[in-house]
Image (cartoon, rainbow, N blue to C red):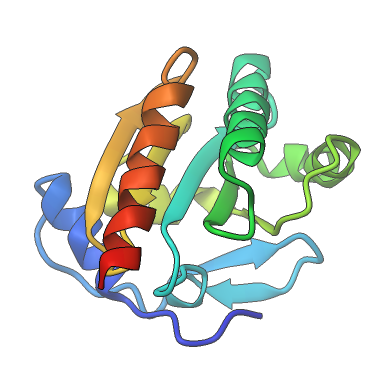
Length: 167
């Protein structure tokens, strides 16, 4: 898995959402093969992070995930950014999520959120889109579907990439 991920992401998310400072060392997600992964090991410090929370039982949420990832692939490419897809919601739908996700042809990792504990801790509800700068600063968030905002998402990601290249 990815090494050198830190917990600062969650502190930034908390301050961005007006929550009090907490630690998330105990929180886990499950990866696509069912292995528990600490939340602080999921994000990259060397590339911008596009984090999309989605629900398998919400078709609009699935379409949002699919469209957002496809636009980002077409305009930026996955090698320059870290895409983290987090499936939230009903645990019974997780068995459907992996085949659906693979059928879309995405070559990236996705995670299951058990009992929406992580979302509750950072004060969000799927569908939700977040972009974190490689320095793990929150630079974009959209609560709800991102339809029509794909150009904004790509622009923010490009800005993050250009700021990273300047240094």
